[in-house]
Length: 64
Length: 173
Image (cartoon, rainbow over all chains, first blue to last red; front, top):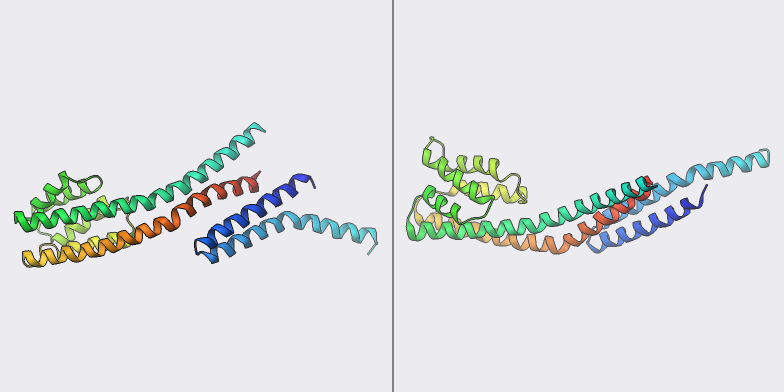
C-alpha cells in the first residue's frame, strides 16, 4: 500500500462531493445520489483488498 | 511518466469537449427554433400577400434562410413542383427525414414540424394562415422551453464534462 492511494481517495471524495452538489443544484437529486454511491463503491473497491489482508494478518497473528 | 501525463491530458480534454458539445447543442436548438419561426413568418407573408403556391413560397423562402433549412425548403419545393402524385404531408415528412435528422432539434420539435405538413395546403388561405399562427404559438413555447433548458443545463454539462474527465483520469492512473 502506498501513499498515492490515500491521495486518490481524497481526490475522488472531493470530486464526487462537488459533482453531487452541482447535480443537486440543478434539481437532479437522483443523479447526485447515484454519483455518491458510485464514488463509494469505487473507493471500497480500492480498499477491500487491504482490509482483507488486515484480517488475514490478524488471524495469523493470533493463530485463529 | 510523460505518456501517463499526455494520456491524462487527452482524457480530460476529450471529456471536457463532450461536455461543451452537449452545452452547445442546447444553444444550437434555440437558434434553429428561432430560424424556424422566421420561416413560418415568411411563409405566412408569402401566402397572405403574394397568394403564391406552396412550392413557390418555399422556393423564395429557401433563398433567404440559413442552413440546414435552406436545402430542406428548396428540395421540398422542387419535389412539390415535380408533382409525383404524393400529398404535401408525405413529401414534407420525407424531406424532414432526409434533411433535418442531424440537426439539434429534439424529436418532439421534428414531430410537430412534420404534423404541420399535413395541414399545409388544406382548404383556403384563411385556414392556412390559422394553421401557421397555431404552429407559431407552439414554436414560441418551445423557444421559451429551450431557453430555460439552456440556462439550467449548459453550466451543468460543462462542469460535468471537466470533472468527469478528472475522475476518469484518477480511476485509470
